[in-house]
Length: 214
Length: 292
Image (tube, rainbow over all chains, first blue to last red; front, side, top):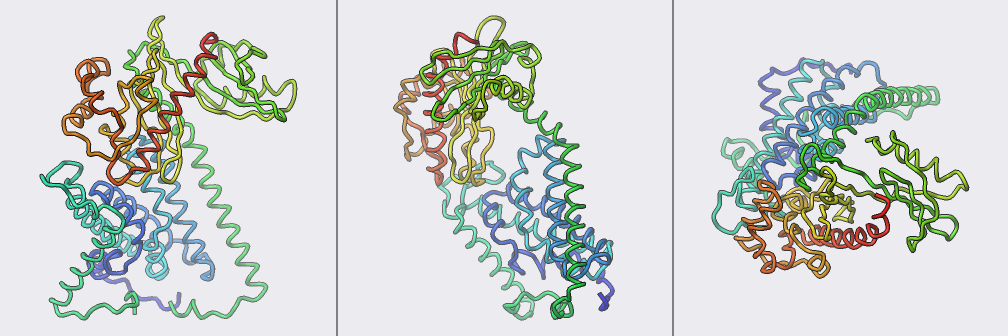
C-alpha cells in the first residue's frame, strides 16, 4: 500500500469500535449470527468473547502478511487466515478445555462467516502495522461484545423473563422477543437509540452507505 | 482502497503467480491445521469418551467400581441378504434378520477391553470380511452396566432427526424396559429454543416411565404444571430410585411430554427418538441376551 497513513491514537481506535463504528449497530455487519445467538445474555456473551479473540488474532496476522501476499488475492488469504484461527481455537478448546468447549463450541464454529472480521482486516490491517492492528481489532471486538451483551440481556429479560438463566420477572414474558423476528426488532430499536443519541449530540444521521474511511 | 479495486485484469504471468501464491497459502494452512489436528485429536477423543462414561455412570447411578460393557451392532448386506452382527465383550455373533445364529467368533481380550471404537471396528471388519466382500456398516451401540455380578441397567445410544441436524442421546433403561433417564449428547438445535432439550425440565420428563407408558406417550402443548416442573428439576441432584419413590404419584397426572415453548419440533423429535430406540432395543436385547 503506497498510501500509508499514520495510525490514529489508541483511544480513538478503541472507542471507534464501541460507538461511532459499532459493528452491529452502526455498520450493520454480522447481523444474521448476532440475531440467531442473542436469545440470552449468556449466549451473547460467549459469542462476543469468541469473536473478540478471533478478531484480534486475525487483524494482527493480516497486518503481518500484508507485504508478502499479492494484493489481488488478499480476500481469499484473509478468509484462510480467519479459518485457521477459528479451526485452531475449536480444536484446542475441544482437546484441552472440554468443559468450556461444551458451552462455547457452537459459537466458535459460527465465526468463520463473520463479515466484521474480514472487513477490519481489509480496511485497517492492510494499511497498518501489527500494534495498531491489535488495538483496532480489540476495539472492534469489544464493540461487538458490547452489542451482544446489550441485545442478549434485552431479549432474555423481555422474552424469557430472566437474566443469566435466573428468573427475575414474575409475569409471563413476551415470547416474540426471543424468536428470530424479535431479534431484528431488538437490533432495530437499539440502532434507533444510537441514532437518536447521535442526533441529540448534534451529529448528522449516518449516510446509507457504510461510513468507514470515506 | 479505491486503488486496488480499479486494477486491470491480470496478464498470464501474473495469473500464474497468483495461482501459485494461493496454492502455497492453502498448503501452508492445510499443514498448520493438519498438524494441530494430529496433536489435539487424541485428547479430544479421550475427552468425549470420559464424558460418555461419566454420563453412563450418572444415568445408572453406578459406583466407581462398576464395569461398563459395550455392545456394538453392525449391518452387513450381501446382494439382497441382510445380516446383523453384534460385538459383545465375549463374542462376535452374526445373525440373519430373524435372529438365527449364522456364525460366532470368540473376542480376544485386547479387543474386549479396548476403549477405542476404531480398534473394535477394524477387528470386526477383518473377521467378517474374510469369506466374501459384503458391505458392512456400524449401526449403533448400547452399554450394560455391571455392578459386581448384578446387571444395573442398560444405556442405549439413540439418534433422531432434530430441527436442523441429528440429535444423539443416551437413554438409561432398567431390566423391565422402563426408562431411568435421558441425556442429550450432541445436538445442533437453536440456542434458547430447541437447545432447551438438554434442560432438566424437558429431558427428565421421560424418567420413571414404563415400557407401556412410553408406547402411548405423545407430545402435548399444555403448559408444564408448576409442581411437576419442581419435581423434574430435582432429578440429577438426587439419585433416580429415591426420586421415583417420592414423585411416583405425579407420573400418571402428567402422562405426556410437555413440549418446550416455541420448539415443538425438537420436543417431538426427542420423544419419537426415545419411543423408537426403546422398541428397537427391546427386540434386539431378546436376540443378543444370551451372548452377553
